[in-house]
Length: 276
Image (tube, rainbow, N blue to C red; front, side, top):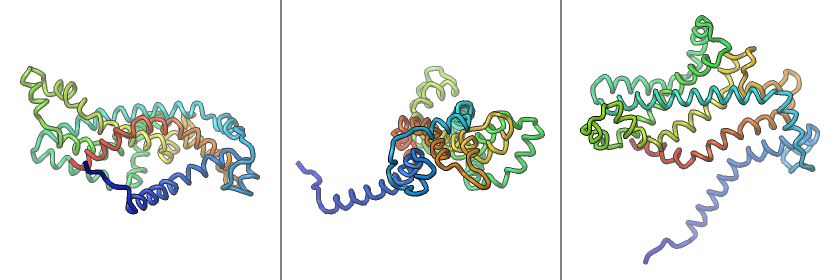
């Protein structure tokens, strides 16, 4: 029976991994610690533990930034955008992966171009388009924008995964009488659960944390999202950093929970997409 011995190399690797983990955990530590301090204590000792455990900042941030409707707006935009991305991205990738003609290759190249084009280039024309369509101030203005900008990455991940999935399963279903759409819905799509987890968490994080587009398209409508609501504590001459950090902790809690629930599928799906 052979086994890998615990030697100096393994110890060094563990020390490096712990050091990297501490580097990534440090911003989270600063965020939580500052959210529990008064402005005076945060200014005098920003990195030390709080002298007393108080959640007054959270209560003040919740009430002053009106976070309850902001969370509702973020949930509506995130859920609808991610659902639309899963449906449209999976169907587009299925057509591209299964039809190996010239048009499918050209269409996939168009999606790849969308991965590298900065979205800021199209921001002003899109704002004018949304304004002319009278969608400013509505959820649809942000949802359509998020679906359009996140679709290239979604199609890239789904296509890479599907190219590694054998056609045998869907061909067996079609021999039994199922249409191609029924074979996709009943056979192929369930096989795509790992990459779907990746698509959900990546796009959910992007939609949840978006600031520029919701601030531009929803300004003055009363449908502000969490990042925009937290930004209300930032002033021209003074900023309430303790309330900013408390609001950020409240805002990241739901998306952090989703990430923890889907992290295993996210890693498996992302690796499968890259290999494909």
